[in-house]
Length: 402
Image 1 (cartoon, rainbow, N blue to C red):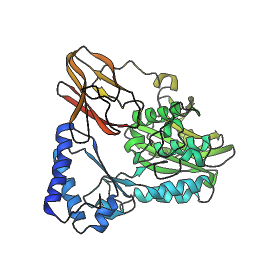
Image 2: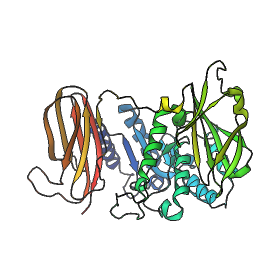
Image 3: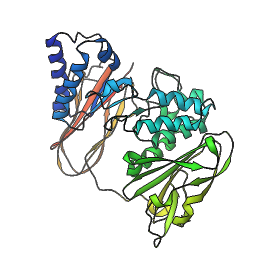
Image 4: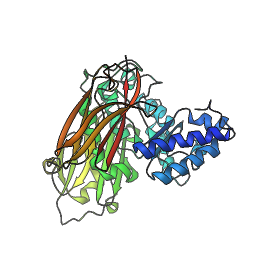
């Protein structure tokens, strides 16, 4: 994107029209701006364009997500411009910490800086273990180290990324993904997503480092949001550890008249605790193990049962993605109404219609074999699939590779 001539008014106007078009017509969730740092740092009109772009897009859709390919520590990129930037500092420091070349204290200092008044409160660092420019994490570390790092990332503030194929242990950077999951990582990542999604404290809660008796070998922290309270313990040491966690009990505001359970929702264990005992909470950790402990009035068996949820409007990510030649699309509707599911190219032209009719409430599957409405195979590239059911509209992106 830095190669675009932002000095020309008509170019800036064209870009704004294009960006607004996809939001207004397809209700997309947001944009990722490639080499965003270059727009800001090398184009005289770049910063002003980014600010006006943000203002106009947020006016259309206040919760649109604007991710810039820029360093999350560079405050100049968030002066009314982007919502998130890539947390390269955490990416590099995390690897050094696992390799014992950096201290947990240094890791905590970085995280605390992001939480300080020095950092814009509306900016959400974009946190990752992998991307297409770097060696895969699973190629650098063993399975247990990778799992611990993923649990750490998914329990931090900010926006965590699971890069395409990371959840199945893919080792190549840009080749076709092997979805067979030879290391059986997908169930673990699925559990992490569910844990974060079902615990508000892990999404937007406060963050406090907890003292441990193991120094810099164990990183423990408390996350709280309203009545939701969880603490996370990560063993960065390559041996088993017996440690004591010091939780400031007065900050928890737990009713001593009620029963309390420390539910390790990651490892599936539960322990009844007295609030006063949490000031010296003893744990045993395997090498590179994480524990995600949610405080609850019910034991784990009672809180992890999934009640059958009512149907809702939903459009899932296609699978596999990228794909060749066939991919599956799952969607759900809660009531009887006309439904269309259509495929579009990057120019916004309709390529194919998979569904067009009145459907009963339920969950449905659609298959696209990479053909257009005329029955011809389409070219390699990015495509969008758009579900409309009544007033509900959802659009997702997919990649066809040949």
